[in-house]
Amino acid sequence: MFTFKTLHEFNDYFKDEKTCYEFYEQQRWEGGVPVCPHCGTAKKAYKVKARGMFKDIPSYRCSESGCGLPFTVRTGSIYEGSKVELRKWFQAIYEITTSKKGISSVELATRLGVSQKTGWLMNHKIRTMLADTATELLGEDGKTVQADETYVGGKNKNRHKDKKIEGSQGRSAADKTPVVGLIEKGGRVMTFVTQDTSAETLTQIIDNNVVNGATIVTDAYKSYSTIGNAYNHITVKHQEGGYITERNGNKFHTQNIENFWSQLKRGYIGIYHYMSPQHLHRYCNEFATRYNMRDDGNIARFLHVVRNSDSPKITYRILTPNIPNPNHPRRKQKPTV
Ligand SMILES: [Zn+2]
Image (cartoon, rainbow, N blue to C red; front, top):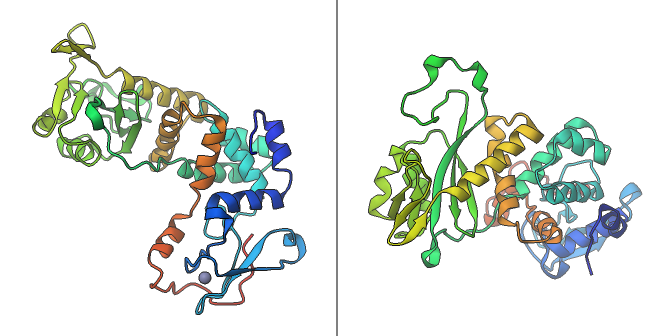
Protein backbone atom coordinates (compact mmCIF):
# COMPACT_ATOMS: atom_id res chain seq x y z
CA MET A 1 0.00 0.00 0.00
CA PHE A 2 1.39 3.34 -1.07
CA THR A 3 1.19 5.77 1.81
CA PHE A 4 3.36 8.43 3.36
CA LYS A 5 3.08 11.13 5.96
CA THR A 6 6.56 12.58 5.91
CA LEU A 7 9.32 13.10 3.38
CA HIS A 8 11.29 10.48 5.28
CA GLU A 9 8.59 7.85 4.70
CA PHE A 10 8.28 9.00 1.12
CA ASN A 11 11.99 8.51 0.47
CA ASP A 12 11.89 5.12 2.19
CA TYR A 13 9.19 3.99 -0.20
CA PHE A 14 10.92 5.29 -3.34
CA LYS A 15 14.21 3.77 -2.30
CA ASP A 16 15.77 3.37 -5.76
CA GLU A 17 15.24 4.08 -9.46
CA LYS A 18 13.83 0.63 -10.17
CA THR A 19 11.04 1.13 -7.60
CA CYS A 20 10.23 4.54 -9.09
CA TYR A 21 10.03 3.15 -12.62
CA GLU A 22 7.80 0.28 -11.57
CA PHE A 23 5.57 2.64 -9.62
CA TYR A 24 5.32 5.01 -12.57
CA GLU A 25 4.49 2.09 -14.92
CA GLN A 26 1.51 1.23 -12.71
CA GLN A 27 0.34 4.85 -12.77
CA ARG A 28 0.92 5.59 -16.43
CA TRP A 29 -0.17 2.35 -18.09
CA GLU A 30 -3.40 0.59 -17.32
CA GLY A 31 -2.59 -2.45 -15.21
CA GLY A 32 1.08 -1.60 -15.73
CA VAL A 33 0.96 -3.09 -19.26
CA PRO A 34 3.41 -1.22 -21.53
CA VAL A 35 1.97 1.04 -24.23
CA CYS A 36 4.40 1.99 -26.98
CA PRO A 37 4.77 5.80 -26.85
CA HIS A 38 5.90 5.87 -30.49
CA CYS A 39 2.93 4.18 -32.17
CA GLY A 40 0.41 3.93 -29.33
CA THR A 41 0.14 0.12 -29.48
CA ALA A 42 -0.48 -1.69 -26.21
CA LYS A 43 0.40 -5.28 -25.27
CA LYS A 44 2.94 -5.69 -28.08
CA ALA A 45 6.11 -4.75 -26.26
CA TYR A 46 8.68 -7.18 -24.97
CA LYS A 47 11.17 -6.62 -22.24
CA VAL A 48 14.79 -6.02 -23.24
CA LYS A 49 17.89 -5.95 -21.15
CA ALA A 50 19.34 -2.49 -20.71
CA ARG A 51 23.04 -2.16 -20.13
CA GLY A 52 25.46 -0.23 -17.97
CA MET A 53 24.02 2.33 -15.62
CA PHE A 54 20.51 1.57 -16.92
CA LYS A 55 20.69 -2.16 -16.22
CA ASP A 56 18.02 -2.03 -13.50
CA ILE A 57 15.65 0.16 -15.51
CA PRO A 58 12.68 -1.74 -17.05
CA SER A 59 13.18 -1.31 -20.82
CA TYR A 60 10.99 -2.46 -23.72
CA ARG A 61 10.88 -2.77 -27.47
CA CYS A 62 7.69 -2.50 -29.52
CA SER A 63 6.94 -5.46 -31.80
CA GLU A 64 4.32 -3.69 -33.90
CA SER A 65 5.30 -3.95 -37.59
CA GLY A 66 6.71 -0.67 -38.88
CA CYS A 67 7.56 0.51 -35.37
CA GLY A 68 9.96 -1.73 -33.46
CA LEU A 69 11.28 1.12 -31.35
CA PRO A 70 12.69 0.87 -27.84
CA PHE A 71 11.21 2.74 -24.91
CA THR A 72 10.84 2.96 -21.17
CA VAL A 73 7.92 4.37 -19.19
CA ARG A 74 9.74 7.69 -19.26
CA THR A 75 9.68 7.95 -23.07
CA GLY A 76 7.01 10.38 -24.19
CA SER A 77 6.52 11.71 -20.70
CA ILE A 78 7.43 15.07 -19.34
CA TYR A 79 10.54 13.42 -17.82
CA GLU A 80 11.90 12.34 -21.21
CA GLY A 81 15.28 13.82 -22.04
CA SER A 82 15.91 14.89 -18.46
CA LYS A 83 19.15 13.72 -16.85
CA VAL A 84 17.56 13.96 -13.41
CA GLU A 85 16.65 10.63 -11.80
CA LEU A 86 12.96 9.76 -11.52
CA ARG A 87 13.50 9.56 -7.77
CA LYS A 88 14.38 13.27 -7.64
CA TRP A 89 11.45 14.12 -9.88
CA PHE A 90 9.14 12.34 -7.46
CA GLN A 91 10.67 14.19 -4.55
CA ALA A 92 10.18 17.49 -6.40
CA ILE A 93 6.51 16.63 -6.96
CA TYR A 94 6.23 15.77 -3.27
CA GLU A 95 7.78 19.11 -2.26
CA ILE A 96 5.53 21.11 -4.57
CA THR A 97 2.25 19.32 -3.87
CA THR A 98 2.66 19.22 -0.10
CA SER A 99 3.61 22.87 0.33
CA LYS A 100 0.61 25.09 0.94
CA LYS A 101 1.87 28.16 -0.84
CA GLY A 102 4.24 26.74 -3.45
CA ILE A 103 8.00 26.60 -3.40
CA SER A 104 10.56 28.76 -5.18
CA SER A 105 12.92 27.25 -7.74
CA VAL A 106 15.95 28.19 -5.65
CA GLU A 107 14.54 26.41 -2.60
CA LEU A 108 13.57 23.38 -4.69
CA ALA A 109 17.07 23.17 -6.19
CA THR A 110 18.62 23.26 -2.71
CA ARG A 111 16.36 20.51 -1.36
CA LEU A 112 17.00 18.24 -4.36
CA GLY A 113 20.68 18.99 -4.70
CA VAL A 114 20.40 20.06 -8.34
CA SER A 115 21.52 23.23 -10.09
CA GLN A 116 19.31 26.30 -9.93
CA LYS A 117 18.62 26.06 -13.66
CA THR A 118 17.49 22.44 -13.32
CA GLY A 119 15.36 23.35 -10.30
CA TRP A 120 13.67 26.07 -12.31
CA LEU A 121 12.94 23.75 -15.24
CA MET A 122 11.56 21.02 -12.97
CA ASN A 123 9.37 23.50 -11.13
CA HIS A 124 7.90 24.70 -14.43
CA LYS A 125 7.34 21.23 -15.84
CA ILE A 126 5.60 20.12 -12.66
CA ARG A 127 3.40 23.18 -12.87
CA THR A 128 2.29 22.04 -16.32
CA MET A 129 1.43 18.67 -14.79
CA LEU A 130 -0.56 20.40 -12.09
CA ALA A 131 -2.98 21.61 -14.74
CA ASP A 132 -6.57 20.78 -13.97
CA THR A 133 -7.72 17.95 -16.21
CA ALA A 134 -11.39 18.25 -15.26
CA THR A 135 -13.56 19.19 -18.20
CA GLU A 136 -17.04 19.58 -16.67
CA LEU A 137 -18.64 22.97 -16.99
CA LEU A 138 -19.18 25.13 -13.95
CA GLY A 139 -22.64 26.04 -12.69
CA GLU A 140 -24.37 22.65 -13.00
CA ASP A 141 -27.28 21.84 -10.66
CA GLY A 142 -28.06 25.47 -9.89
CA LYS A 143 -24.64 26.19 -8.40
CA THR A 144 -23.69 29.86 -8.39
CA VAL A 145 -20.56 30.92 -10.29
CA GLN A 146 -18.51 34.00 -9.41
CA ALA A 147 -16.54 35.70 -12.19
CA ASP A 148 -13.83 38.29 -11.66
CA GLU A 149 -10.53 39.46 -13.07
CA THR A 150 -7.31 40.57 -11.49
CA TYR A 151 -4.00 41.98 -12.65
CA VAL A 152 -0.72 40.31 -11.84
CA GLY A 153 2.79 41.75 -12.12
CA GLY A 154 4.10 45.25 -12.54
CA LYS A 155 5.20 47.60 -9.83
CA ASN A 156 2.92 50.31 -8.52
CA LYS A 157 5.74 52.65 -7.57
CA ASN A 158 6.92 52.67 -11.18
CA ARG A 159 3.57 53.81 -12.42
CA HIS A 160 3.10 57.44 -13.31
CA LYS A 161 -0.11 59.12 -12.11
CA ASP A 162 -1.10 59.88 -15.71
CA LYS A 163 -1.15 56.15 -16.52
CA LYS A 164 -3.98 55.47 -14.13
CA ILE A 165 -7.21 55.27 -16.01
CA GLU A 166 -10.20 56.97 -14.44
CA GLY A 167 -13.20 54.85 -13.52
CA SER A 168 -11.28 51.64 -14.14
CA GLN A 169 -11.54 50.62 -10.45
CA GLY A 170 -7.86 49.73 -10.35
CA ARG A 171 -8.03 47.90 -13.67
CA SER A 172 -5.88 48.60 -16.70
CA ALA A 173 -2.17 48.79 -16.15
CA ALA A 174 0.33 48.61 -18.95
CA ASP A 175 2.83 46.43 -17.09
CA LYS A 176 0.32 43.99 -15.59
CA THR A 177 -1.22 40.87 -17.10
CA PRO A 178 -4.96 40.24 -16.75
CA VAL A 179 -6.16 36.94 -15.29
CA VAL A 180 -9.84 36.03 -15.47
CA GLY A 181 -11.21 33.68 -12.82
CA LEU A 182 -14.40 31.63 -12.54
CA ILE A 183 -15.23 29.92 -9.28
CA GLU A 184 -18.15 27.70 -8.40
CA LYS A 185 -19.36 28.25 -4.86
CA GLY A 186 -18.06 25.27 -2.89
CA GLY A 187 -16.52 23.87 -6.07
CA ARG A 188 -13.73 24.40 -8.56
CA VAL A 189 -11.88 27.46 -9.74
CA MET A 190 -10.71 28.04 -13.32
CA THR A 191 -8.19 30.70 -14.38
CA PHE A 192 -7.44 32.23 -17.76
CA VAL A 193 -4.50 34.48 -18.59
CA THR A 194 -5.81 36.90 -21.23
CA GLN A 195 -4.67 39.78 -23.44
CA ASP A 196 -7.43 42.06 -22.23
CA THR A 197 -10.64 42.21 -20.22
CA SER A 198 -12.94 43.32 -23.01
CA ALA A 199 -16.59 42.29 -23.05
CA GLU A 200 -15.78 39.94 -25.94
CA THR A 201 -13.00 38.15 -24.02
CA LEU A 202 -15.01 37.79 -20.81
CA THR A 203 -18.18 36.68 -22.57
CA GLN A 204 -16.30 34.02 -24.51
CA ILE A 205 -14.61 32.59 -21.41
CA ILE A 206 -17.91 32.43 -19.55
CA ASP A 207 -19.73 30.97 -22.55
CA ASN A 208 -17.11 28.21 -22.96
CA ASN A 209 -16.97 27.20 -19.31
CA VAL A 210 -20.25 27.92 -17.56
CA VAL A 211 -23.54 26.11 -18.16
CA ASN A 212 -25.99 28.28 -20.05
CA GLY A 213 -28.63 29.80 -17.76
CA ALA A 214 -26.54 29.48 -14.59
CA THR A 215 -26.39 32.27 -12.02
CA ILE A 216 -23.23 34.36 -12.39
CA VAL A 217 -22.14 36.94 -9.84
CA THR A 218 -19.75 39.72 -10.87
CA ASP A 219 -18.90 43.23 -9.78
CA ALA A 220 -20.12 46.24 -11.75
CA TYR A 221 -17.32 46.20 -14.35
CA LYS A 222 -18.88 47.20 -17.65
CA SER A 223 -17.42 44.30 -19.65
CA TYR A 224 -19.82 41.95 -17.85
CA SER A 225 -22.89 43.88 -18.90
CA THR A 226 -23.51 41.73 -22.00
CA ILE A 227 -23.66 38.31 -20.30
CA GLY A 228 -27.18 38.89 -18.97
CA ASN A 229 -28.92 37.34 -21.97
CA ALA A 230 -27.62 33.83 -21.58
CA TYR A 231 -27.17 33.83 -17.80
CA ASN A 232 -28.87 34.97 -14.64
CA HIS A 233 -26.42 37.81 -14.05
CA ILE A 234 -26.23 39.34 -10.58
CA THR A 235 -24.09 42.43 -10.06
CA VAL A 236 -22.47 43.18 -6.72
CA LYS A 237 -21.79 46.88 -6.33
CA HIS A 238 -18.69 47.36 -4.21
CA GLN A 239 -19.11 51.08 -3.85
CA GLU A 240 -22.46 50.84 -2.14
CA GLY A 241 -21.01 50.24 1.30
CA GLY A 242 -21.13 46.46 1.08
CA TYR A 243 -20.18 43.48 -0.96
CA ILE A 244 -23.42 41.57 -0.75
CA THR A 245 -26.44 41.87 -3.01
CA GLU A 246 -29.73 40.36 -1.92
CA ARG A 247 -32.09 38.93 -4.49
CA ASN A 248 -35.30 37.12 -3.51
CA GLY A 249 -33.97 36.50 -0.02
CA ASN A 250 -30.67 35.01 -1.28
CA LYS A 251 -27.35 36.71 -0.64
CA PHE A 252 -24.80 36.94 -3.45
CA HIS A 253 -21.15 38.01 -3.31
CA THR A 254 -17.79 37.53 -5.06
CA GLN A 255 -15.86 36.74 -1.88
CA ASN A 256 -14.65 33.28 -2.96
CA ILE A 257 -12.92 34.46 -6.11
CA GLU A 258 -11.49 37.46 -4.27
CA ASN A 259 -10.05 35.13 -1.62
CA PHE A 260 -8.51 33.06 -4.38
CA TRP A 261 -6.87 36.16 -5.89
CA SER A 262 -5.36 37.08 -2.54
CA GLN A 263 -3.89 33.56 -2.22
CA LEU A 264 -2.41 33.88 -5.70
CA LYS A 265 -0.99 37.31 -4.92
CA ARG A 266 0.43 36.25 -1.57
CA GLY A 267 2.20 33.42 -3.40
CA TYR A 268 3.41 35.87 -5.98
CA ILE A 269 4.85 38.28 -3.44
CA GLY A 270 6.06 35.81 -0.82
CA ILE A 271 7.44 32.95 -2.88
CA TYR A 272 8.02 33.86 -6.48
CA HIS A 273 8.66 37.62 -6.28
CA TYR A 274 8.11 37.79 -10.00
CA MET A 275 5.99 35.86 -12.47
CA SER A 276 6.77 36.58 -16.10
CA PRO A 277 3.67 36.98 -18.28
CA GLN A 278 4.64 34.03 -20.49
CA HIS A 279 4.72 31.64 -17.51
CA LEU A 280 1.84 33.18 -15.60
CA HIS A 281 -0.71 30.58 -16.72
CA ARG A 282 1.42 27.83 -15.11
CA TYR A 283 1.48 29.63 -11.77
CA CYS A 284 -2.25 30.19 -12.03
CA ASN A 285 -2.72 26.48 -12.80
CA GLU A 286 -0.65 25.56 -9.79
CA PHE A 287 -2.73 27.70 -7.46
CA ALA A 288 -6.00 26.63 -9.06
CA THR A 289 -5.18 22.92 -8.70
CA ARG A 290 -4.05 23.45 -5.12
CA TYR A 291 -7.39 25.13 -4.47
CA ASN A 292 -9.42 22.49 -6.35
CA MET A 293 -7.70 19.66 -4.50
CA ARG A 294 -7.95 21.38 -1.11
CA ASP A 295 -9.99 18.56 0.40
CA ASP A 296 -7.80 15.79 -1.04
CA GLY A 297 -4.82 14.48 0.84
CA ASN A 298 -1.14 14.80 -0.08
CA ILE A 299 -1.17 11.36 -1.66
CA ALA A 300 -4.04 12.23 -4.03
CA ARG A 301 -2.27 15.42 -5.06
CA PHE A 302 0.98 13.56 -5.65
CA LEU A 303 -0.74 10.91 -7.78
CA HIS A 304 -2.63 13.53 -9.78
CA VAL A 305 0.65 15.06 -10.90
CA VAL A 306 2.44 11.77 -11.51
CA ARG A 307 -0.41 10.54 -13.73
CA ASN A 308 -0.76 13.83 -15.57
CA SER A 309 2.68 13.49 -17.09
CA ASP A 310 2.28 12.85 -20.81
CA SER A 311 4.42 15.18 -22.83
CA PRO A 312 2.13 17.33 -25.04
CA LYS A 313 3.94 16.45 -28.29
CA ILE A 314 3.58 12.74 -27.60
CA THR A 315 -0.10 13.03 -26.80
CA TYR A 316 -0.50 14.56 -30.23
CA ARG A 317 1.40 11.75 -31.89
CA ILE A 318 -0.66 9.08 -30.16
CA LEU A 319 -3.83 10.83 -31.25
CA THR A 320 -2.68 10.88 -34.87
CA PRO A 321 -0.69 7.65 -35.27
CA ASN A 322 -0.94 7.66 -39.09
CA ILE A 323 1.01 10.85 -39.50
CA PRO A 324 4.69 9.87 -39.62
CA ASN A 325 7.07 12.06 -37.68
CA PRO A 326 9.81 13.05 -40.18
CA ASN A 327 12.36 13.65 -37.42
CA HIS A 328 11.82 10.32 -35.78
CA PRO A 329 14.69 7.81 -35.91
CA ARG A 330 13.23 4.52 -37.06
CA ARG A 331 15.69 2.17 -35.43
CA LYS A 332 18.91 1.76 -33.50
CA GLN A 333 17.74 4.18 -30.88
CA LYS A 334 18.95 3.66 -27.36
CA PRO A 335 16.35 3.64 -24.62
CA THR A 336 15.82 7.14 -23.31
CA VAL A 337 16.24 7.07 -19.58
ZN1 LIG B 1 5.44 1.02 -31.29
